[in-house]
Length: 134
Image (cartoon, rainbow, N blue to C red; front, top):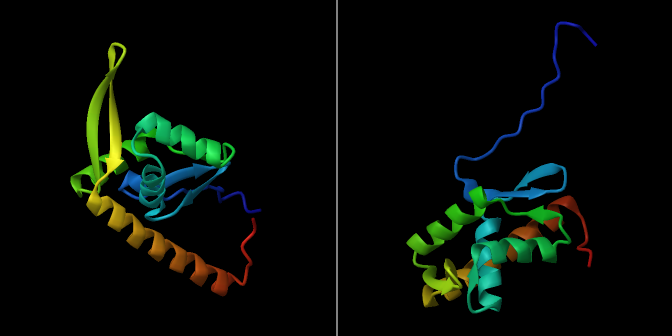
């Protein structure tokens, strides 16, 4: 290799941190997947707090996907601003805990996002000619 060159690795991170999920050693950026994940978890459970969402994702992926606070909380705040989730604060012991729950708009928004995500996966499977694994 020529001594005049350096090998440098670049990671491009979008300005909106809501689209960042860290998986294993490599960083994968899935635009919009964090929103879909949050809405899915909230559709399964009546209400969840941020740390609980993060832990559930880690549990479901056997630790391969970790949501950082810098990605999760801005996503939750954006969903709240869009009227897809509502937040309530409850005191647990001496600490306030903010719980998030789907609104009616959030339930229908989740169905739309899930449908779009499934369509995207089908298209990727066709393009890449891969079969889904279970």
